[in-house]
Length: 136
Image (cartoon, rainbow, N blue to C red):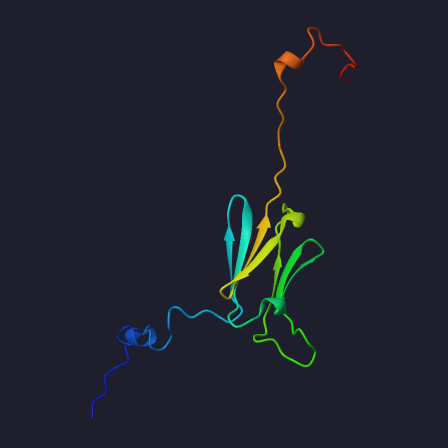
């Protein structure tokens, strides 16, 4: 009886088979994050969860928390879910909005823009500038 030697390249088709690991698999607590020039958008797939069971919270103006919570103490939410994200520095805390439609929660965190420069209109300057102090 003769055994053929093991060759790793002959086994690759078995481990990459979509029957073993489907390529569309995502974990239950997956939240998709998208960055746009105007905002950060967080989308969570929460099918079967009622709108009243979803809590979106802001902690210390630095962390966004998305979780499910039972409405009554005697019941459980349809899905137990909790994720916490550290927010970037320049955001508009007062402009955060959330919407829940067709089992998808979308939280929009707008960016806070600060003007970095300014413009001086030459027509606003006096004809002669007054010397206020000499440089050292």
